[in-house]
Image (tube, rainbow, N blue to C red; front, side):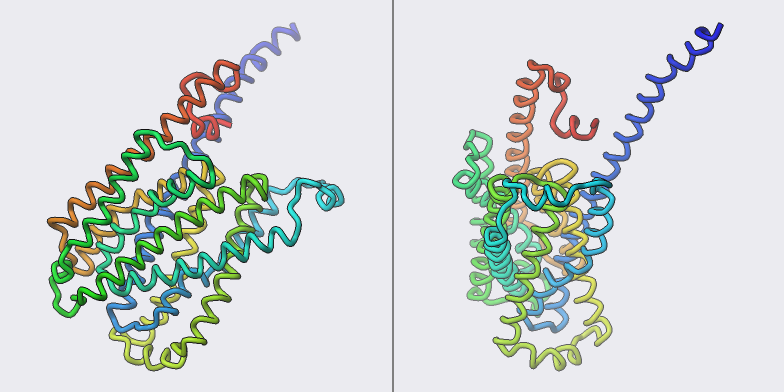
Length: 384
């Protein structure tokens, strides 16, 4: 009699486990969607606010650079809360100290300082490009970061050049190069926003340099995670972002004071077309939104992969130019429209190759019984 009473309970256990796993799966997908929204909306809003700063009277390139990185203290509560919740309750700290796989302090310092300085230069070039170029043109050129990432990954991370990768590199390169032939006075309908050919070329070169720098940073970070830091845990990724942000912020502040631009900030604020309050709010929200973008990137790296995070970032290529047409009255026709189509095509080709790689990897794993046949690494990670 007692055995019969236990039968329904035993039968319900698999069903309960299935419901719990399904709930966890939906929660994981919801988190991925939220992080992706942070990346797409954060990148778009921060870029538009950065351009608005220059449009309405902002003149300091170093200030435009500083707001891209100086908001990192906002990440500290996020870092503390999630690091505490993900730490084991009873961890032997002595074992962590003597762990031979842990990199030395000098090696960590070298990694963080090197990446921080590269990020500082990259942000400065980004600021100059955004200052000289219409935001739609600027955003399209930035799509070349995926091509640079693949190029540097070939040398640093042993990325294989397949037909799809080569196709992506060619398309993204062409989509950026053809913008050189876009007349600078054809980008906007407002004559006050038109720039000289010389400034257009400077902006183009700086934006290409910024994209190359971003691609290099991503490749170097991936190399550091693999060879030095030995993983991509929450703490490792957040340490990378925070410490390199500290170095980059110090370098940018040195540039701000050494250039003498800090002397004109009060006058710049008083002369801002939208008022002093709007000036402060613009810079403040630009810094905050860039950090929301950073949180989204970290979340996607941890929930899926660094490749997926970068792919979502580049997926925002069509968003900014379309918003720029509405906000800044940028024109979207001719060469610029062709450039957008080529950039999106290149992005799809790049992502599809990695989708094929993941499927092939799953096929090999499923033959050994590691994962279910037909599932992707993303699905495997979400289902855990």
